[in-house]
Image (cartoon, rainbow, N blue to C red; front, side):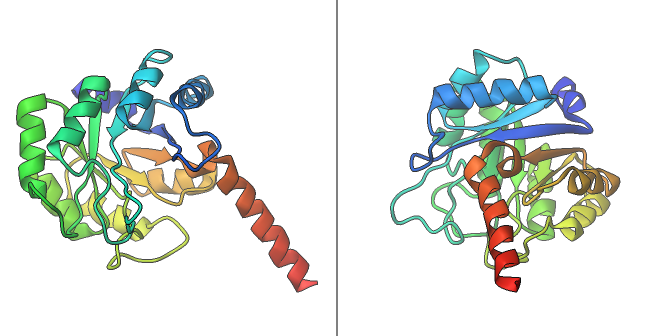
Length: 234
């Protein structure tokens, strides 16, 4: 486990994910995306669902941060726990080959096991690294206390009570680095190399970037929105 953490230190993790309603959805495409990230210099990958993780494992040896999003037509991304919400969800991606299990460790209402119980069960029964996706300092401190190996800023801005900002949450990153003696993963709204470097300067152990690299429709939208604003200013 220490080998994996050391491999990720000061490195870039690329998130390769696509939902069913997106053009790049499909395990074969995600495997190609992951291989491209590997060639480009990523030190790790973040992937969703067992089928995608299995496909990615066939084309690269990079460590995989596995998540298992459980989404229904009634899901509210601000209200609901969707990132690896249960032990069963965690076990399925572990069996598919995930080297690290990431799960929602926010204070939002959840069914079944508590955050503390879920982390304990994963660590005790699967003996795998756990990344805690959190949205504020309190959640990060609690997740570290409960046994999470990595604390990640992933969900800042995705809970009602965290800052709703367009830029990375550098303040949360600094607070976590200051208060927690565990690796901190910077994640969420990083769109440029300059923003990435700033995260490392503030103490991030690793950084995870998805949309800015692997979601062409979001990249295109940023350019088209900027162009629209420019035209409106004329």
